[in-house]
Image (cartoon, rainbow, N blue to C red; front, top):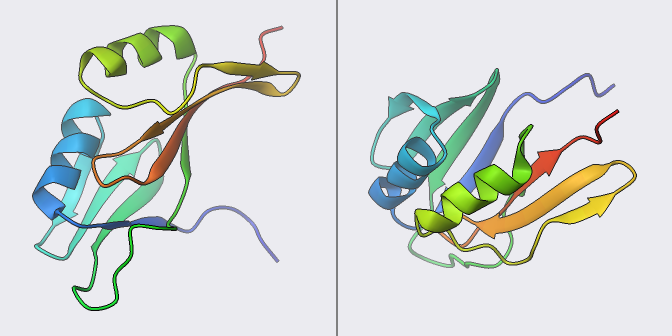
Length: 117
């Protein structure tokens, strides 16, 4: 039975670059760090950064992490100003709004804002 998120891990090519992105751009707290593994805290969810194996690694695939926000336009504007690449505009639906972007390693991420009301 699924009862929640145990952890999320994201494959990365360059640990230092990935740590800088998640720590400095997204503001997540680093809980532990080594050359091949790091963990960051995101409002009670641990995000693991896993160094890719040099043999057979691929930049395709990987996790998609969705980050909650109450100000999607403001956060998108701030991140664009810091050099973050967004792959689309903010899209709004009955269930909320999303804005897709990439991390420093090319993994897919999203901002999510629940509907107001």
